[in-house]
Image (cartoon, rainbow, N blue to C red; front, side, top):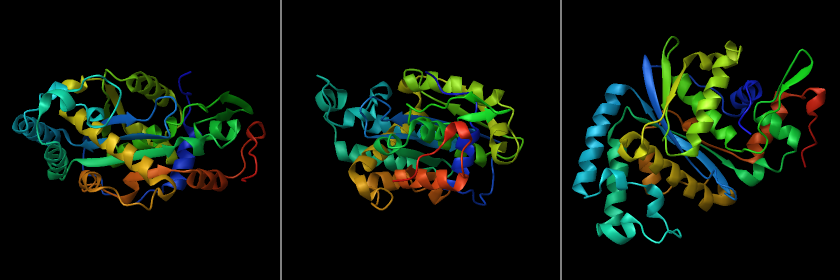
Length: 305
């Protein structure tokens, strides 16, 4: 089932767990490119990550990216970060065809991204097992359940943990666009993530809550779906999403404390705020639930264990 119409509760929750700060908004229009890692069944963590910036900055980045690929003899359509890691596929370009310097190429990718100081990273992750330790009603709350006129009009999305980081990523980028401006988003057309994104965008725009905590929705532009195989911006998003995914897997109970590996640290160099790279654990989710106060009678919370 796709995700619900209202985002009321997740906005309230997000504002408490990840407080807003005083970022200076500098763009009339920004483009965000997002990818995911870990939305498959059985994944231990889920990450939504990518970059945002002005269109002029993205054009400069695209030229630089293509030049970097040429220097390392990597065809653009062959760039898939998942091929950097062991997996059961019988053949991959990097493992069986390329023959280049693997470490040098990864460092060049990270350096190319970080050179563009006005292209900013965003990453939101969640520990899947922590999400499912909450009751069904709590997960409905965390993923948007809402009452209207005493009746429950949305059920939330309690079986899809990626609903939390995806909305947090959208919200963060939209808040960097000025009032009256828009943040447009791009997702790979060859990813199931895009179908989810298009429905969610429509639901958010149809929502009647656009004041106060929800004012960021007025800055939400449109989703688009270019082919990742010929879109450098999406390839950069793919790279940081996978690095963040493996960082979360390696961190385990030290999530939020373990420093990112050098490659990931380079990719994060131009983040606007520490809060633009964050993780939702059982502790942070519970803090959000506690600070939001008691839920409606139809959404009774269990006591925190």
